[in-house]
Image 1 (tube, rainbow, N blue to C red):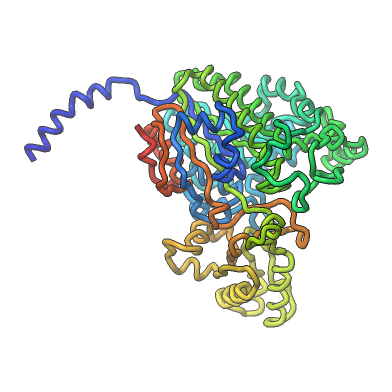
Image 2: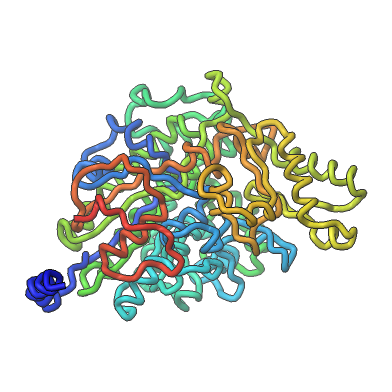
Length: 566
């Protein structure tokens, strides 16, 4: 006891000194999420990266080389939410990009909110908010910790990549509307776009990017990390004969006047400055990332983020990598070129952050919301296991089996997120026990080729699953929104919505190619180095909380990553 008292007395001067000093925090936090970025891209394209982007983050920062997601499905909505809440869908409730609502009998979208209105764009694109997220985010907690003095803004081409990270208490969240080529928001945040956003949109940046063909940044022969340009498993742009360079963006983005009028008719009102070009095309090109970087830099500049005496937070997500990956696959020249161009966009963003707040004054982390499988055609061409499973044939086979067992009826209401939603009112009408039918369906699925596991929601909830496939499913399961039967496809197999034609790739499963993502830290009080320790995506938010000396998010289940902390 005396020894403890002596230690406390010795500590008092240090504590008093710390108490009297200003609380050390970075001036700015920038969270960067690269949509569909596999961990191995950091090194696959290493020789082609410049010195100011990914290499700077690795060379000056800290890298966790074994960062994984610990739930399924690994999609954009759940990914962004889990990064910023520090917990899994079982707690925050974002179980997919879409899910079936039993109350309404309809599928809902992750950021749909018809209680708000669009600001700066069409109602279809703008009626969005974070209301479906059931937990606070690290960005919410920063606002709370500073009595709402900190400024939090989300930026992304995708609405869900901006809204979900920015959180419930954000000052703003902006996303892209291809109908007018501008960044928009909703009345959840404000009643009118700031003048600077209106000015940025009016400059026509999207149209300018689409005014030139997409050709490779380097001579195409140098893309030795990728497959040849013309392979059968890549999908061409609509209007192209083949998915090869150069992609004639001016021609591909041309929109006939009739299509513009149809858009106006569908919206019910005349659209302001309706474009005569398909400006939504930019999403599927690397220039969507460049446009995002342009807008992010302008956001930092105009909102004076990191210069106001409080820690501000920019939640930034690059989504064109996902669109390109889905269309062309993981080994395409288009994918490599997109990452080489993103590397340059990151370099100018980091340079601007240095200029705006000073070197070492900003805390930056970079990760991904999920990774991706190889293209089924690529796997087949190289005699590797994997392929595409048709979701419609799988659903139909289960429906037919239930009709044979229990008679006519629409037994399946939805097939979503590798889950089956049964017609519970029909089961009640037929006096069938829900758990028994769930197990029947699980057994039917287990008999399907290339299904590694199927489990009923009842069994999933009755047991604890610390490891294995069921652990991933349990962490991704939220009963009010999840299905009745959950399944896992064998390694290498993916959902093929256009089956039997399988182009490009997708993601969503618990195998390492979908769960393993980069995690880089850079800037304020980040020590240089790397770690091979396996960490989880839910550890990011509590690590930021530890850096900022604030409360972790309300549902947080992750732990601070001590190796990166000074």
